[in-house]
Image (cartoon, rainbow, N blue to C red; front, side, top):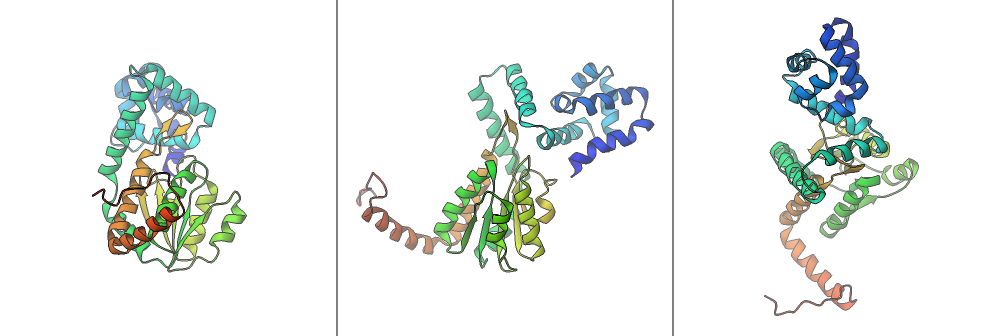
Length: 294
């Protein structure tokens, strides 16, 4: 992954850097969790160099400016930091904000959705819809925090098509027992965000080796899932406390489900009418809608 290579690149270039840049490089290597959230001027101040040195350093590292390097540092900490470190960093960020926690988080979540909308590959999204519709079987895997997303996707997709396999297990061995029959005409949807699940990565790798269509729902083009993905849906997921914000990925999944339901509109209406009768007969819900509602 490129983010992991950044620290290596800084270390490798250290002997060729100017005195000021070496000072800055040392600070970043030791405190990248703090540097990721600093402006160029602030980073220069705390590391004892000028703002212009910070900008030149970013260019020396192969970026077209400091903001690009900062983005990579932010991506780096999502994969490198432990849960306690993430808690400390995020708590410090929130404490420095002049907004209450509710406003802070909801505004940032709104920004994440807007950012995802502006960068997501819409052609890839359309291809994913088509491949799911034409698949012999659709396998869905997402473990740990991503399990909430995978179960949500599986629940609604199962109402639309009858070939959904929700891969839900606690060990890698049991997961492979559920996907070992995957074939070229099948689709596997893998969902994972930093710190990426090894089980999900291995499942994507296996499905990819079997020439199945593999769809990654993840946070970055540098995600390890992308290496084994036929198509990738990139949704911004940032760190809030030791928790990851999954609101943008959920919105992408919602869009995926709606697109599939629209493509199968007539079948969906028939299916839902049958389900309404079943729900009513077996009193699944506490409220019975009126037939004269509309």
